[in-house]
Length: 329
Length: 283
Image (cartoon, rainbow over all chains, first blue to last red; front, side, top):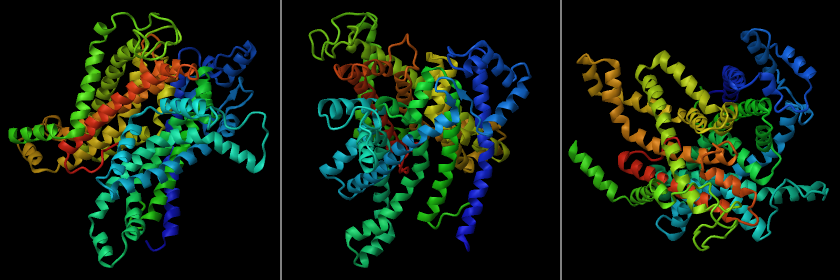
């Protein structure tokens, strides 16, 4: 622990090296799935391929070397994918990589928003439920958490649309910005934020409930520990004890879940984005599903896996910043 | 042993969330079993005028765009959701117990390899992977089950591994080894039964997750089109959400109630069976 910064970098490097086999396995998995799909891989690669001519087909067959052995095909696919050549989408008229990266920002807005909302509101809810244990407020918070925890997100989204968009008219029903408004600057940001309220809230609900439960349990646990008694004996106020001491310790289990949440939200974004017509990665996955564009779908899976691997590393490093006792190995 | 069993039984009866969960789940299960009696006709049949609102005469939950009885579809859907949820959780638990058991019991190289595989399955975004698997294999009941099992066994394996790992060093296991018992017999007859409480709790979480996953996949159109499921009904109701909210709302309530029942049951079982545990594993 003498040079924490240097140690941290060494750890990150080691973890990145460890991630390489994982990513190779994911690509292999994708290759296996492509060959498992009914039909010639080129048919699969081209989706429904109504627009594709026989010449393009033959060219692709040669390019993917379908006449070659399976092993050779595998290495060709591995090499292409690892150099981020994820194929070309005839439907969209652009490479799959460009498509995916183009949609990434919309999904990131949604995920960062949902992450922030779920951590903040979930923690506050759990804290209140723990401090006011036995009151009606605490009961209501925990009941809301249990119900949110059991609801299918896409359905909650639809019900939000019915109530807040159709009946009350507070928020738009779908999309990321008003069509034809052509706002710029702050006005545009506000418009996007207005459109983002319902999808962000929906996406954050499940984890908000989870964090409220984790936080409540952690706070109750911490309140029994000796350091709280000490702090109280020192004459610290209840509020100070909570914010300075208990909250910091109780946040640890929440942080542990953060990595899991990123992975879960990437999956959740498929249903949420399709419900709200939010033009991100999830909607792209949904569209590629319907076009039977498996290659695009596998490309999305590949890139999101990389995203998850990277966030897991970031979360582990962040953990040491919050809790210096944790040693990176 | 029988004394502690009776104690556990009494504790269960005194646990409000466990009793509530059990009653709710029994209700959903009873309705699903009685589906054929309550609504003998196929839920796909057109039986009334389209878009009748809830509480219309003869149609307590209303009708959908094709004049199908939503109450009939919800009741028949209960069968699909429960059956799929339990079968999937059973398969995932079986794989989890096998992988986790071997990993925890043998340790060393076996453990390293199996845990690497488990970690891999925990890294890939599970819902996205399930979508890809169903899309590749073509939607049907079997591919749905396969896809959900593939993405949900890993946390169970981790849990079982941890349990077996800690039970392995107990004295009774040393005794079994001294008696010359075989590895498999020790693992399956001696160690795993003692890990059962944690496995049961984790399996209940797996049932709830499986029902939610199935509904989301069916909602996206990846379900079996020949089977009336709650997710598919919500998917169909989505296009008429502005005019006929109840088409999507009713099956959603059914999912929520069922998952809520299982979660309450799981929470209660956790409190009763694992008094020491603070937070549910794999949540």
